[in-house]
Image (tube, rainbow, N blue to C red):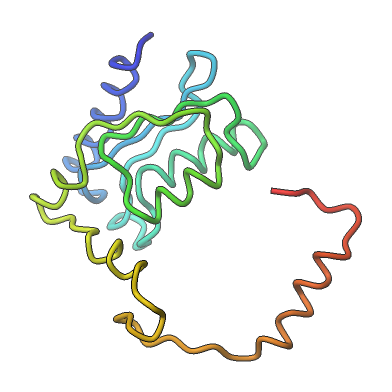
Length: 156
């Protein structure tokens, strides 16, 4: 199978998700060695979960299949350029590559505008839309110190 074949599956998942009322028009698949090992549709509405984007659902499915938190040697196909949250999840999962169909501008044209998030990330914390404050840093540093001292940790 080629990129177009796997992308066709991601796009079919996006269409089916809309028809089933699961959420927005987004689908994704994760492929390893020519086999789909993870599938995802936007399930924000179905699961009442703002993090249930197609890419995140597909990553979770693929990682469960592999028994790993990383997607070494995998390709993620997504029907649309990932939002900032999904892009972060993709980078943490570390696939070998990603292929997308629609752009974020295409998504914006039908009501899925993540431009505000990109803008927010470039603003200083005190200028962001959601008021944010720091609290109990010294106490929380104790958990960081525990991690730093842990000799049997799995780095990621």
